[in-house]
Length: 177
Image (tube, rainbow, N blue to C red; front, side, top):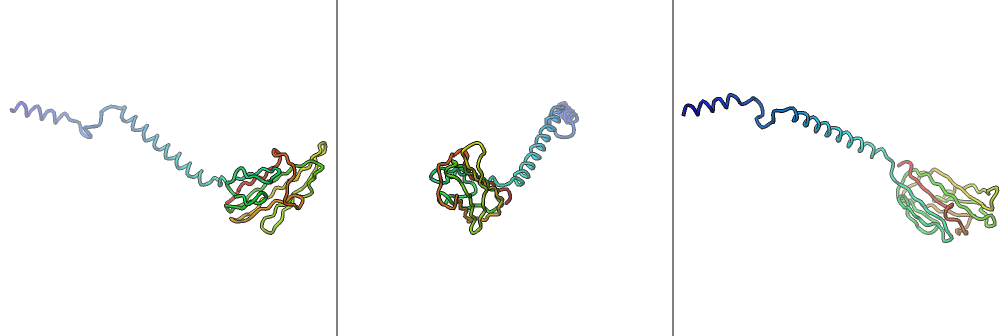
């Protein structure tokens, strides 16, 4: 019996101080270091992603194309279409508006007018030197508010001509909230 007690005491004496469950090799320290490093990098990446997300402007973009029936909205993140010549703002902000209209020389374009509520913005009409074509362009940066209506008139009429879709567009991009 005393022999068993001596063996137990020897076993107790030989038990190292500290955590008995932890393996006593250097691999565990390396693995712990790698895990902590990975968690730190993941945390920093998440923090940067959150900062980047808040600094990015609204993905607010709208685009319409023009054909014989009027404007057809193909992307509508910022506006909704009221009719074939009128768009209504959904989200307030500063917008860069870019409009280009093309017609045959015989049809002609004398003016391209964008009406925002009661204000009018007139685009420049020009003719290409070597082709029988006319263009009208309008680029404007405007502060717009939710509910504002944009009406596009060409030659003072709410009508369109036989336009080439590839060169007729109305693009709006929100540049500031």
